[in-house]
Length: 162
Image 1 (tube, rainbow, N blue to C red):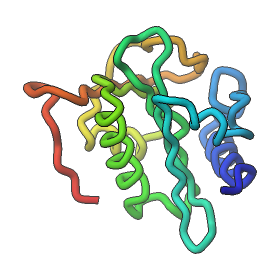
Image 2: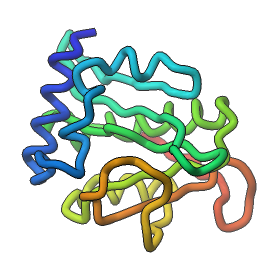
Image 3: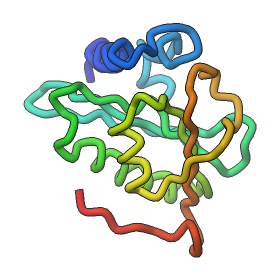
């Protein structure tokens, strides 16, 4: 995988939404070495590719400071990939892997300006919460979501057709 191309897609999306400054994934050192970060136990990153072109990707990793919880990380798509089910398929795969890895909760941070992304999260049953969880190092985000991965009741499972 071309990590430079992937980091280029991520950084372009961060610029597009005004998140190319401290407090966002822009400054994360792993952007240029994603394969090393996501090779650790409890971590996974999927890259969406079409015709040899990297469309974007998304991953999960343990949420520092919160037991049994993973964080949805670096879910960004090139504009040409949006609205075509790519994000939906990434989410389906990541939620399944989070369950396999025995996480109980999945958490994410985003920006209120990322309206389409928030729509995707809500479709998958993420609920907006009032304040951030754990230590992500991304203090610039202003919207936080949480989803229970196991159990029933308010946090029951959804069947989504991508």
